[in-house]
Structure formats: structure tokens, C-alpha cells
Image 1 (tube, chains in turn yellow, blue, orange, red):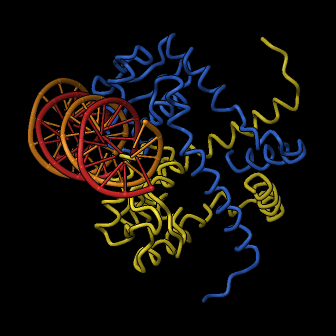
Image 2 (spheres, chains in turn red, purple, yellow, green; image 1 turned 30 degrees about the vertical axis):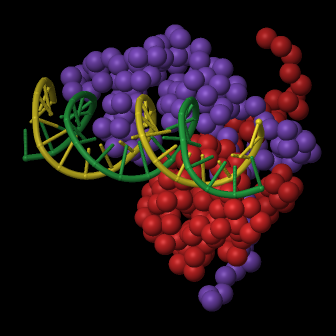
Image 3 (spheres, rainbow over the protein chains, first blue to last red; image 1 turned 45 degrees about the vertical axis):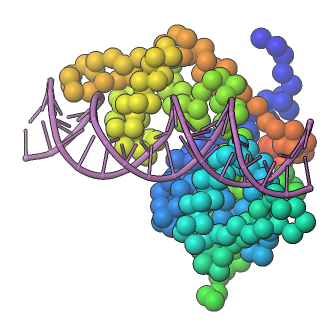
Length: 142
Length: 142
DNA sequence: TATTGTTATACTCTATAACTATA
DNA sequence: TATAGTTATAGAGTATAACAATA
């Protein structure tokens, strides 16, 4: 057993707790997605596509850390649903860029609101703790 | 637009930031799982099965919020790998309980350590923030 | 030659419905 | 009759390899 600093143990304990929270939310995501007739990964794509943004398919594959061939089917299904559209990229005819349709933007707005709706246990946290979380997470994600 | 209290907005902002963090980790999970030649959901099953615990298959389905038929294949693959085993449940011959094998317990130990290994950006947070996170998340998850 | 996106293929994850064994 | 788990089936998510169009 290697000696570990108290600071390292604190960091691991914090990350372990975040992991438990992650796995819990991971389990809840399919039901949340189903409220919009979406899959978890489709939710993620809509979350990533900001209105007015032009996102090359290859960049989406990078962000999702998945193979480009996977994005083809993913985009097919969202395009069939009328939520996103492929467009030719100006300047490089190999590239296709993705844009939210107006319908997609509307679904995304509702989805974002739903994703940001805190659970009951979270809402019961003291407001000072919630403020502390905002400050810490903003620093972490900046 | 409905009026929302400042407290409600703080809670939503905090939950939104947690959502972003969790979607990022969701993307990283397949690669982490692949370090152990596992899928994300297989990681989750090992995470849930504490050594020595007897978990009925139906309870696993509940915890994973998925259909029981799904658990059959999931358990098949982990059992083929020699990481878990089905056992008859004492008292009700319809039920099968799951247990970690010794090999499964070893993999779980390494997996838990890996899941708790904080990312570089997280380790760069002030130790006071990390301690605050531990305190807040323990309260949230209790 | 290298890169972007697609297709073909295979495996895992997931749900629904029908089934078996047991309660 | 009801419940626990399995099987059959189907669709979605994922990767690898081969391919077409373009750079």
C-alpha cells in the first residue's frame, strides 16, 4: 500500500461521490430522454448543438468521443425527426455541417430546461451549499 | 415568462453545471470501461455488486431502471467472463441471486480506484473547494 | 496521398411479448 | 393467479474495415 497524502484522499473521495451521482443520473437519463421521445445520446447531441451554430459532423464525433461512422446513423435519425439538418460546408465539399432546425431549437430549449431541473434532494440542500456548488463547478468547467 | 425566485435560479444553475459535468464524464466512460474490457453498464453492475453481497437479479433490474429481460444478457456476459455468478436463492426457487467471484472482486477493486481517480482539472481545484464538495455531496447522497 | 463522410458487418444494450418454473 | 427469470425478436448505439468523393 503506497502512502497517499490527505489532499489526494480528499480529491479521490470527492471524485468518488461525483461518480456515484453520475451513475445515478446515468440511470435516470433514458426516462428523461423518453419524455422527448429521444435516446440519451440524442439528448446529448441536441444539448451540444447551440442554435445558429454550424457543427461539422467530424467535430461532433470528436466531442462524443465516438467513431465517425456512428455519427452517420445518429444524424440520420435526428434528421428524419426534423430536429437537425445536414448542410454543405462552405470551403470544403467533403464536410457536412449540422444545424438545428426551428423544431430542433424548440425541443432543445425544453430539453435544456428539463436537464437543469434539480431533483428534490438537491433542492433541499441549503442555499449556501447550492451557491458554493455553482462557484466551484464554474471554476472546474471554465 | 413566469417569475422565479433567485433561489430557484441558483438551484437550476447548479444542476445545469452538474449536468454538463456528467455529460462530459458520460462521454469518457466507454474509454474508462475499455481499460477493463468492459462496457459502461457492465462497469455499473460491478460498481453496484459489493463483495459478499447477494443481489437478486430483479433488484439489479430495478436499480438499473431497465427491463428484467435485459439483465439476463448482461449477467450472461459477465458470468461468461467469470466476474459474477448466479446462485439459487434460499427460500424462493424462482429467484437467482448474483455474487461477485473472487476474480470479479479483484476487477471491481481496480475499477473503483479508477472511477475515483480525479481528472487533472479537478485536482487543480483548491483543496478547500474539494473539501466543500465532499461535505455537500455527502449531504446530497446520504 | 490524406481526409470526410458513408456503407457493410457484427456485437452490445434495450424494450416488448410470450414462455417456464415456482409461489 | 401472480412473480422471477428466460427466450425470441426488433431497433438503437457502437466499432472496424472498406469505400467514394474531395482536398
